[in-house]
Length: 196
Image (tube, rainbow, N blue to C red; front, side, top):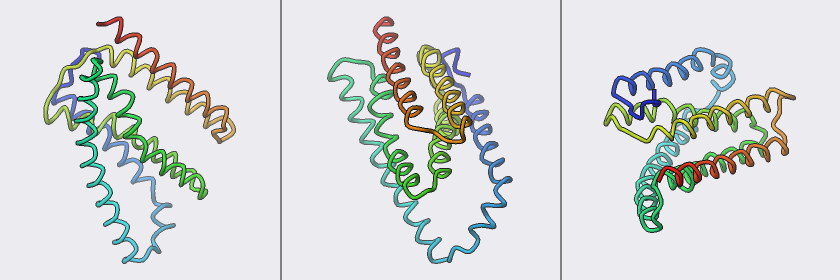
């Protein structure tokens, strides 16, 4: 949808439908999850929901400041705000997932860690972008799709390949993914410099 450098309201709706369809399919397949966790006490559930809502509010407020300071920083050192968004802001926004996933892995909840990361990527790429397009259709440099979109596809393929071999993600494979991210950042910087 983004190859023409524009996302319309219609495309935004289609992205939202795609994201919701994915999560609906997960809900349909989650009978085992419901059976396993139907013993949770009501007061515990209420407490967890309250803390979750509070955490989302805090994240929303902090996101506003992250955008403001990120744009100001980009203008201050005279680089494209897109680069700041793709690097520093994106790393900052991923820190909650990183800390959550590390905690989940340390407590032997590996599936929860992986689900959090993959769920965030899918939500951002479909529902979040779709909502933005519905509220305000927007233009962007198609290079973002050519470079970042291809990098996302390759990163996803690598992750799936690593996970399906041996049903685990080891340290060496983790280092490969980090190296791939560094290569992606270098490519992004190069392409943006050539495009000036």
